[in-house]
Every structure is written in structure tokens, then in C-alpha cells.
Length: 143
Ligand code: TYD
Image (tube, rainbow, N blue to C red; front, side, top):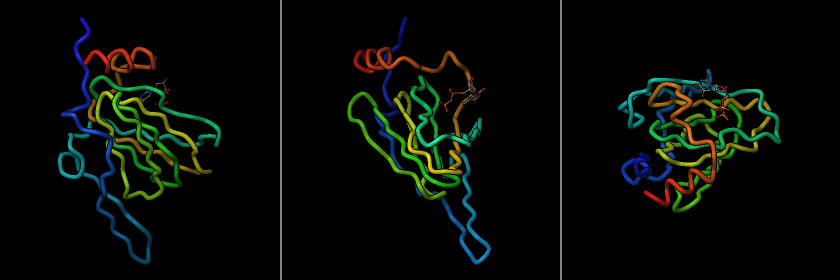
């Protein structure tokens, strides 16, 4: 049986300001799970070498929460929680986007050399992905 899906706690995607330490030597941003992000961090991955015309993401997660940051460069994240679409331009390492579940996300307009850093609340499990937009729409409508 398909269980009802709702964005976590009714939460919407939102920008989190991460601690940043900037001095003449550069800039350091740090994140601690359950302190700076509202989950224990179980997985970290990063995406690089994205051509300007390419799109990443194009899926939702059933359970996994993610925080997305531009560790270098910039890109735009389009989100849809089934209720209201939103768009976030990420261009500073200390600005991170919290994406609840389930939220459809697409990442586009990567600048040259951009690094998309993602913190996730759970391990990689393909069965936890919703990769079909129509399936996502039906699930959030049913929820
Ligand atoms: P994909 O979901 O297509 O990337 P994106 O969300 O950026 O569009 O993942 C690309 C490949 O990487 C795919 O074969 C699954 C694999 N992958 C892992 O093995 N572990 C992970 O944590 C992630 C996020 C992806």
C-alpha cells in the first residue's frame, strides 16, 4: 500500500544560514548534524563538472531530507512540494537549502566549476527515490 506522503512536518524548502569563518586566508563554512541542520547527517555527496545546459536531480525522496549548498560557484534549485513551486539561487557556501521530503527538485544553471554539496539524512537507496514526475504528483495529491 502506498502510504500518504507529506513534506516533513508540513515544512517547505528553506534557506539555512550556515556558520561561516572568513578572514584574510579565505572562508570556512561548517555544518554539524542536529545543530545546523535538522537531522543527523548519514551521507555526503558532491556533484562537479556539470555542463551549463545540464540539469541534475529531477526526483523527489520519500524519506530522505537533504541540505544542498554551493560549495563553489552557483546554481539554481527549483522545488515543488506539490503545493507551491519555489526557486532558490545558491551562490554562497554559507547559504544552504533544506529540502524536506517529499519535494521534487531540479538543479540547473551550474556556473563553470560549481560544486554542489549535498548532506543527506539517510543512505542511498534507489527504492526511496521517486523519479517519475507524474507519480510524484499523484502521491502528493493523495496525501
Ligand atoms: P542521480 O540520482 O542521477 O544524480 P542527481 O540526483 O544529481 O541527478 O545519481 C547518479 C548516479 O549516482 C546514479 O547511478 C546513482 C548514483 N548515486 C550513488 O551511488 N550514491 C548516492 O549517494 C547518489 C546520490 C547517487
